[in-house]
Image (cartoon, rainbow, N blue to C red; front, side, top):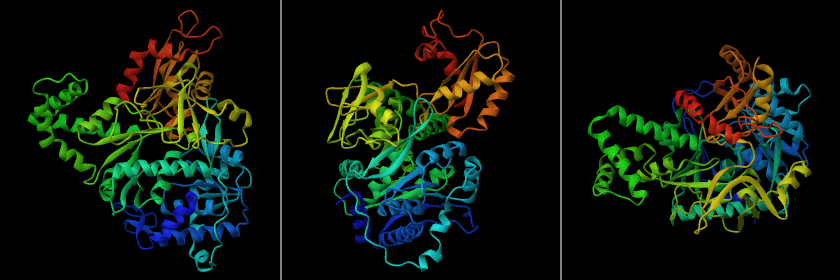
Length: 559
């Protein structure tokens, strides 16, 4: 039984159990109705899948055709995704907040037979960027009442072989050109077995469904794997519908666990510490002493009174903080970018486990997962079962196993560049301890990875700014592990000129590629001052070290 057959079997076995929910909290829906929680039971989700399958068949798509999905998360997104796979098509999920021109480029590469858009505004923006005839359809049309009323019994699922591609997920490369990562039935079969086993460890023996909350877009590999994992288990997955109301939504979901990027966990930590500082008095004193004590305990150098302060904070402060994240919380799961060790330790001090996950789209989202019983802060856990990992040249992490993708869509040369001698070359640097727990230490490539998990190739943006900013000698983007991009601009340049060109450029970029701060330096980078290589390329590590204080000031002002 493959992953899809398992999901359908579970849905059929739970016709009356809620498996998916949308957390509409407060306000009004887009149609002007009072917002309320929207749910789908196993039978209701199967019915929506059947509606979508009927539409896809009527559209004349054949096995192996690509079907693009561009929409925010929803129950209907999950139904359409499963329908696409069940019909033997290849799902191409794209980020709805991506710039239309970038979406158009990825769609040209994938050449889908049908493009499914979440709303008319997105469809129209895409059409303007494409400038050619598009075969698009809105989710509302796919799931219309007319389609449902004319349904006939759908045929059995398309026969899927382990090597069949079921999805193409786009990820950025060092050139800035997006590449389509093909994932197969075998990739998903192995990964969902591994995630299910790790979640069983976390939750233990239980009869009630796991309560799971989710806010990250399903077009990201880790996010998609979580969706499929929940549908493969006895779970109820509640979807965020408004990122500005996350706290309320988490309260509604009351989750046992949920997947995070470091950005949110760092914001929660900052908010907690800020609120306690505002309160002041004895609460702030206890918290500060407990925090200092926790640092010493983890450094294996505790003082006499450290356990007293930790115990006191555990009685009068920590329970109220944990309560805000829900009474059922077992753990926070964090992936997509390295989490600061201090932040992981902060949550552990509160009594909340943070399980780190490391992987790439090319590894079906996951290479390592923390063991819930043996967490080593600052590390991302051991390799998942059936996966081999080792260090190559320059401490590059190499991986092989059933989770490794077969290649990039229509890019054999780029596939051969990363798949060599049976090993996938991740481009990440790391190390592993005697217990097999891995640490990610940096990137060999120049990709900037924000703490939101977005990958950004700096070169195209840098080149555009050097061309457009009068007097600029060089532009260097920074932001690895940060919440936004910033720039170092060298040369005799007026600040107003930089401001105006950044405003112009930012208007054309998606939110995560906007440059929100800059530092201007009159002295250009050169071979002589050690900031350029002999052939004139940027020495990024040396630049980051030289401008370390300026970089810190930029982020201190804006974060």
